[in-house]
Amino acid sequence: MKEAGIKSIVSKKYHPYSSKQQVVERENLLEQNFSTKSINEKWVADITYIHTLRDGWCYLASVLDLHSKKVVGYSFSRTITTDLVIKALENAYETQAPEEGLILHTDLGSQYTSEEFAKFVQSKGMKQSFSRKSCPYDNACIESFHAILKKEEIHHVKYLDFQEAKWALFQYIEGWYNRKRMHGSIGYKTPQEIEDNIRRTA
Image 1: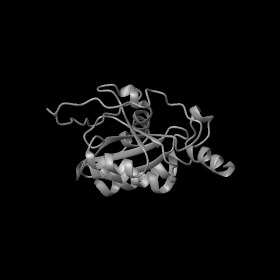
Image 2: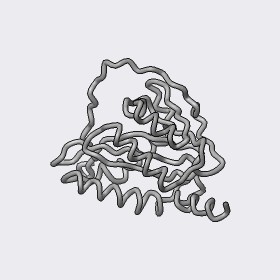
Image 3: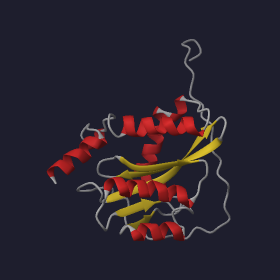
Image 4: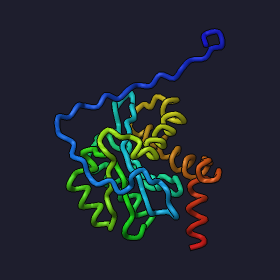
């Protein structure tokens, strides 16, 4: 690698604070069944961590549609709060206008298991589903999106501050991932193509 001038990408690791709070298992409606017939049937959501030089760690909450693979909503913040995940879901709900009964699957993070978040989900007619404790495979699709985001964008850049990272995420998600990046799992189409075709024939 030295002779060829190749260097590996070394990313800054996020070390979460350990919590002594006991994690309570909750109902898993999805049961790793990621199959769908149309858009807005099953959404998955999660939080990932993005480092900036000036503002330190910042947090991205994403919501992904399992049928189209489209990131239907997201929110970026300097703080990891319940408000962060509510804003991401609110963004998804307003842009997609799903019918009642949609399943929203998340992990057992305190933001997603909070009473405030549960009330918001219920107010939109959605059903909450949760991964089992220490089982990332239950939410593999959103984990996969965040891994792709880091591999294709975040690990190639050092963001100066929150605003620079926010703009870069907008360009990646809205300009590239949803509208230009083809996915083998959906017939080498883009997520937006899948959604547009369904809405056109509905």
